[in-house]
Image 1 (cartoon, rainbow, N blue to C red):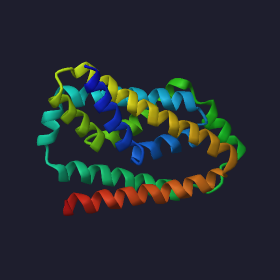
Image 2 (cartoon, one colour; image 1 turned 30 degrees about the vertical axis):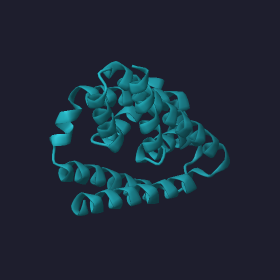
Image 3 (cartoon, rainbow, N blue to C red; image 1 turned 180 degrees about the horizontal axis):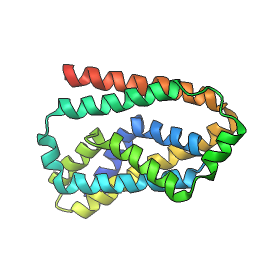
Image 4 (cartoon, helix red, strand yellow; image 1 turned 90 degrees about the vertical axis):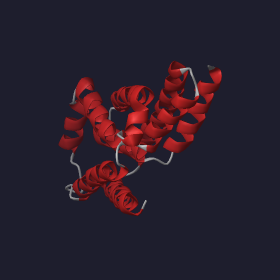
Length: 193
């Protein structure tokens, strides 16, 4: 049981560190200025994805990779364009408006964004694979979720620091370029394997 937890935690933690979801969590934190709400939403999305991975992971492996990757690529390309098209400078009212959103609304937004981004992700597939190797599905699920929640906590903490030290328009521009990069990489990977 402990082995399943540790293997899932270690594998998923290392795979998620450079992942697009960490960037998405960071960007959501810089946008909404509500780190705890973003973290709760992201963790809720991760819980759903881990449950899906452990229970129907073998079915996800049978889905054709190309259509799933194309959908994810399009989502990131659209997100990148939207970030780059932003007005460049968020005024005080915009910051106040984003910060005044309810905890629930920010958490639901974060859960939706990450939920879509994580579908069919490497960490979801890795969790499914680990679950097939260990008879302790709950331990694998907890290990994977704890790893994802830990990476999200790092991203939210980094996002909070960035909002204090880096102008928002700069964060949006960089995030837009990163999202476009993820989108293009995913699209190329979808067709080249």
